[in-house]
Image (cartoon, rainbow, N blue to C red; front, side):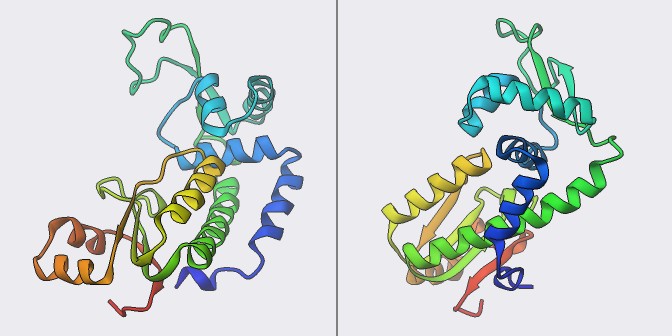
Amino acid sequence: MPLTQLCTQPVNFNFMLEHLFGSKTRYRLLRFFFHNTEKSFFVRELTRALDVQINAIRRELELLVKSTLVEETTAPGHVDQTKAGASLRKYYRLNIGSLMYPEMQALLMKAQLLDEQVFVDSIREECGEIKLLLLTGRFAGEKDVQTDMLIVGDVKVRNLEKVIASYEKDIGFAIRYTTLTVDELYERRHMMDKFIYSIFEAKHMRAVDELNM
């Protein structure tokens, strides 16, 4: 299903979820953890990623730990334990064993799709004449793809940078993106470019496809 058919009122749904969770910070923390299900984070990492004051992060983490959706851990495997203080920090991660996990996953997955719709609409309205926009990588759960977005057309790069930076601040992670003109795309496909073919062969969503590719 095209992304543009998912919802007609995404902003109202997110506003509703913020009230449902009782805190915008709590909602953003949960979204961040569900975007990063295999990682653990210490408090200052979360404050930097979400641009939220440390006391607010600590308060919400305490509540989420009590709810069982988030759990504390020490020096997870992906962290370099030789770094100073790594073994002493408290880390936090999503608790996929929580009884609330399946229901919360379904709810936040819908919220993610609606957020992506708003993001795509902003790109189409502000960033030039977009002929093709594919979401892959972190948007589609593909770990081996080297980009998260392919944007083809007459792209206004500065506008695109602003839209992406705003969305990154909201979701808490960096987006890798690739821009091409239509001619560049056709040329690279004709040359059997491995990078381009890896994008089309991976799981992806075609948010815009005026090229019928």
